[in-house]
Image (cartoon, rainbow, N blue to C red; front, side, top):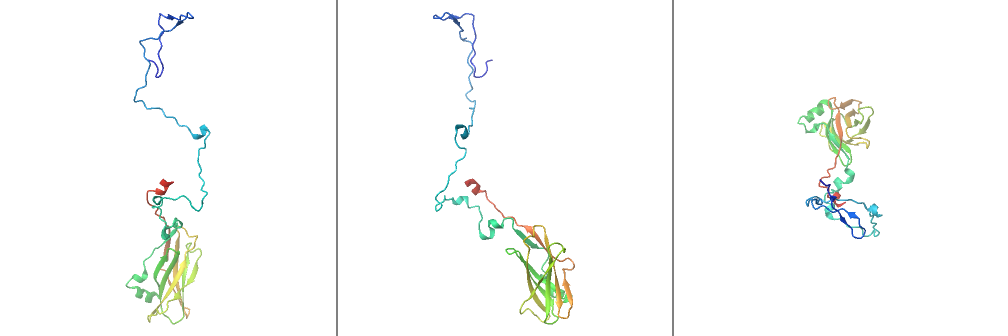
Length: 238
């Protein structure tokens, strides 16, 4: 069977002479046909890069008119959430969570204050400023008193203290309210915890603590992931 694309030639016993030079040339056989490519055979494709022909592989277009840069279609930006509360700077930001219930929300809160003399009343976190804020209720033992928040960010290897300020008009005859605020350190990373307790010193030198029944008040740091949802139209534009 002849190979594809080759013409089969057979030498026969009888040759025809060439009149001018009197030599014999082979006669084509009428029994063998040239092989043909089937009509449905796919054509072969060849890839040639521009540099083969001496051309550049890339084309750089420089914008000279900086006052009139190219316009980007709105469809390329619709999935990019660039509002102030979810900007690119918030990607990978930190999020803090209180790991305790609000003592002041309990119906027996005042009983707790009078029993142990000092108690955290409420706590909140300003996620924008990475700040812990809260209020403390203390049993009143005279006019002069000092409230401190003792906090650690490394499981009590080291600690610091912040003074709480008296809330004007909060005296109810038996207790007073104080407020405090503490900024979390920039070096605090996801998985780390802050623990704090409250110290109350009276004008007579008496000392009282609220450490959440020996467990301390715990705040955990988490990684905040920005939701960049959508089908990536900006990638399509590029």
